[in-house]
Length: 249
Image 1: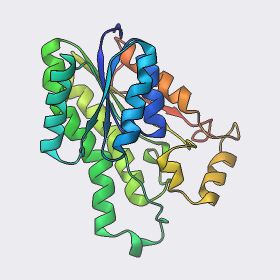
Image 2: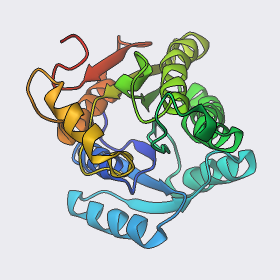
Image 3: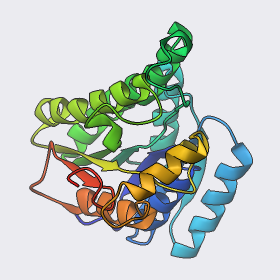
């Protein structure tokens, strides 16, 4: 798909990885809807900075766990830009809860993590899908994690939510074919993101040392692969791991 002149919705677009994705897509000529739940000023700053790519960009407030807010955000994006071609589900939440500390894996924490990381992408995907189908094309990229591939990560709830997102990718690829292609990127440890900020220092160091390349995954690598998944015409239902060789090693 030619990305020039398309419109991309990036949830969590004001975050560390989200900002890189916004810039990578804007560099290809995409107009960008920077979706945020908090930090309005940061989202406004990201949207303003994207203008250097000679594209239009604007911030949109939305709690992705709330259906009414999701539909209002999607309607506002279409009113603002006239179309909607790409969805990047990057909004996420985590909290460091050791796997064996089941007492602190409360119902409230479980629900919050699952709602934001899994239910949210489902709700936004359902909201944009009819628009993409009518337009005859669309691309959806979910941002999962290597924690979704095995029992690792900041908490049981986080690992389960990211595993669910990988499977949601496959299921939505079936549901939305052939017009809409749905793929997923599963990064390993990414430094300089809110997710990493919530990890204990020893978890961050273990993530570095456990990778074959001895370093964290690169945010620009992830953003570049998101762009590739938006450009593709024949890949759908796939998950690409970017983790400096940790998973297979």
